[in-house]
Image (cartoon, rainbow, N blue to C red):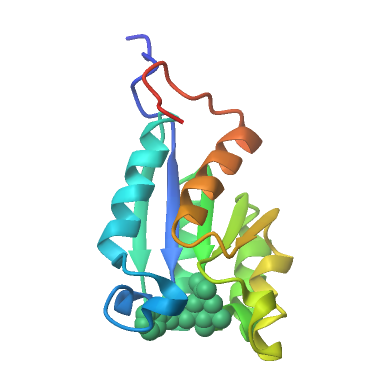
Length: 162
Ligand code: CA2
């Protein structure tokens, strides 16, 4: 059967790292009031506008995030959106996993990491991503999905309200 513009033509893995399960519960001045569930809903809706699915995962463990990246490759995901939290600034393992799988990746940070402490200014995961977004709040995830869709040639469907 022919695929309609409303049907899914691929899956994006949306990976959130340590402590992002706490979103909406503290530090609202830095991270806002939205919860991780709100972020994941936003991602599912944003992906659907391009006929894509969002498979959202969160882990506080570096190795599990590496496993998710491998899984994205094994499952032939069309892209990865990753906010590796503090592991962005420390994890060569996540950098290497992203480089190894060659799935196009966008790094997102809710806060502007360059306007914060100097230890947040470098990101290993950014070096393995084709683009980064930092400081747009949770809207950064929607922008990242839109940018990824453009990169892979996924078109917004007719009903999209972008
Ligand atoms: O701005 C971002 O998205 C960060 O990735 C968030 C990380 C931080 O280590 C990065 O430098 C920038 C921290 C995530 C912790 O999230 C919390 C959310 C609410 C309350 C406490 C922590």
